Length: 287
Image 1 (cartoon, helix red, strand yellow):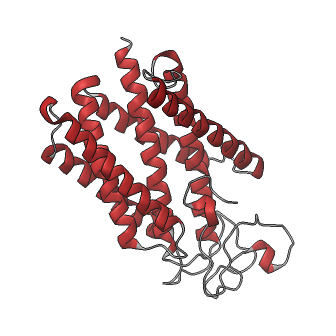
Image 2 (cartoon, rainbow, N blue to C red):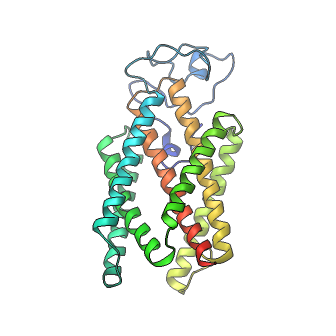
């Protein structure tokens, strides 16, 4: 099962040294290769190991939940640190508003390029992932400062708390198996995401060439609806990412792949934060 995350959707975890990426779902009673896509990995759990059941002894070269948590903490920590520094060192003021937005757009473009480079690499590169996190943090810091200063004071705290709430809620629902990631779920999320992105691109084009707010998807009632839809899609991405990580741990993915998991989770959380920021800004503007 591939995640809808832009990183995971391309290839899942990497194929290297004879390790197959885990795209096939486990099949009861099937051969080892069908049930465990890492069956050729000498560190993989023995056939019959079930999620939530007895696990094979830990090996140093196999990805664990602790690895994913620590790498995700480092990546998100870099985002938060650079965001705070850019907020403090690159204050947004009326005299330099154009310069501030230029810095934000430049950082966003660099972060996008780095994320695309990592997405097409066969192996995760920690330095590349952390560099992406740093530039993403600069973009988020400047944009958050501008929104909080000129549009909706206090909205950043609300967006951060909302993002944390979504993450905790989806994680709890996933662990309780209230959310079941199936092929139908995956297909629905991917179709919804494609439609959402196409509408946002159309809105951007209309706003650039037609002026104003384009089709109105980023303000008013439609903006609120699309903000909620964007957050729901982000929550679905999280569920797919959790499934990808769970399968990687269960099937014995190489330890280095925990960086890929951290990268994907960071992308999803940034998506949710930006949608939260926009939604709360619209709500405050309508008060």
